[in-house]
Image 1 (cartoon, rainbow, N blue to C red):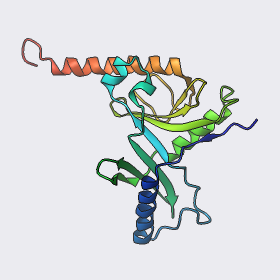
Image 2 (image 1 turned 180 degrees about the horizontal axis):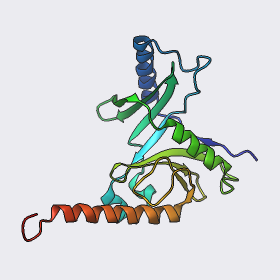
Image 3 (image 1 turned 90 degrees about the horizontal axis):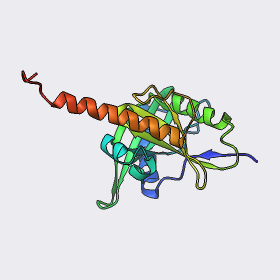
Image 4 (image 1 turned 90 degrees about the vertical axis):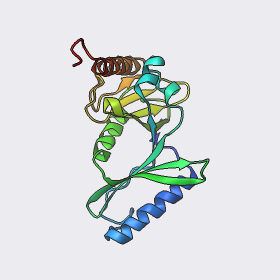
Length: 202
């Protein structure tokens, strides 16, 4: 059986806005099209799930409880030798999709490496996994999050982070949640100490 790791399809409004945005950049900057020969194949649209420290601690590191839906969608492509990233948010109530980030891309090669490491791991055997990105800004965490119904979620940090977890290493859900909770608790304690003055007001 061939196991697949796939990013889910984005909402139609997000996909359309991303197409318009990237098309405008190609025209303005003279970049070649996404599928032009010689360009690196773009990653699929990547759902980004963002979590805060308080929610992580309160949930015991249970990512699914605190990051139930994507906060944004990340697109990345290497066009004309210029790696670019686009992040979009669907504002359903306002009936629009807004770009929250357009700029140089630093992380796609590491995301590709994390996906390759996951594909080679023996724990990824019998299920098709949905790939997501987990982001915790206060911990400098960006991780590939592999999710499949009925089996253990897996996590692969993309870059060095305040969490005790190495980039490119695959972690099971319980192990990763424990590491995430400990890092969040430690960081919150440091914040609280910094906000509490001593007897001299320092």
